[in-house]
Image: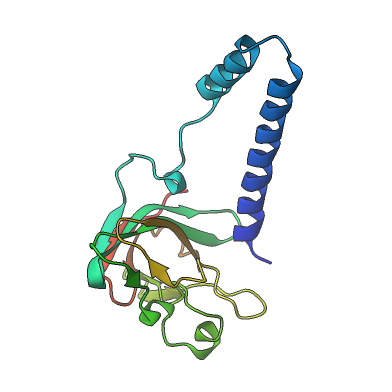
Amino acid sequence: MSIRFSSRGATLSMAVLIGLTLGAVGCSSGDGDEKPKATATASTAEGSGPSAQEGSAEEPLAELQGSNGLLLRITSAERDSGGFVTVNGELKNDGDKSVAIPSGLSGNETEIIRNGRSLGGATLVDSKSKKRYYVLRDTEGRPLTTTGLSTIKAGDRLSVFMQFPSPPAATTEVTFQLPTFASATISISG
């Protein structure tokens, strides 16, 4: 499939493993409330803080206004060793009514549209090299981005991601574009 599924699958697997381990410790102690509380406290103290994908209070790379009160907050743009750039963020409905996700976010490529609503219309523009990078696709033509978008309720947030081919290593800033949203310059880390 894609790197996205592998890395998130590993993260999910680790979270399930930790949850099961903590659950087993809590169920098997039999010494009252002290041991489970100590275990939970130790896990909280030793664990890392929330990642950018989990809605941490870190400064976003960019905030882009869209139509109907939609706001896209880009939290990271990371280059990986496989030659990809993954852009993570959060789509929020800042309005006071539920909003149907615009179909224009999928872009206008037939192959991507055929796979349902997504953020497949996103691009990165490297003005230094004069190149535009489109969202990657898997071998079946599905965009490597958040898919299955339909409606977002007022005040709700949705974690999103998009994967692109990596610009040259010397390129550290690109312009992020998504149909119906304002454009923004973001920095690539890694």
